[in-house]
Length: 120
Picture 1 (cartoon, rainbow, N blue to C red):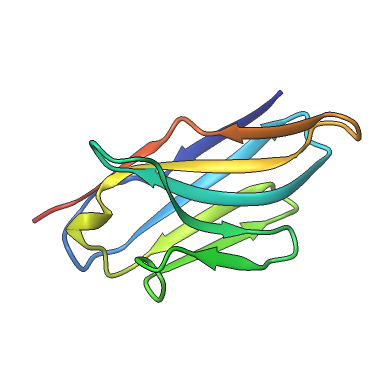
Picture 2 (cartoon, helix red, strand yellow):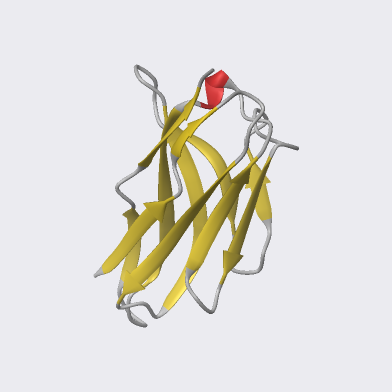
């Protein structure tokens, strides 16, 4: 069983910054991709950014040049640095990871989500 726990959400003014963190724990053999997704009220969950175990990144067009994803493979953590935040960034942010719990058992899990609110 693999658990993902996010932290770092909160209320911030437009133009401000927040840093989200996510830690994976449990029985972990390897983690392939880690990423962040978000879901605003009344909208579908959408990709924000992903990062592979080799460090290749992918960003939604709406966050490019403002958000930066990073990971620490040794600690099984992923972070999202969010700068120049806009009201439209307001959403619940979810951590996601996929990999293998053992050599033979895959996993693909979500965290419980953390609220980010951008408002003056």
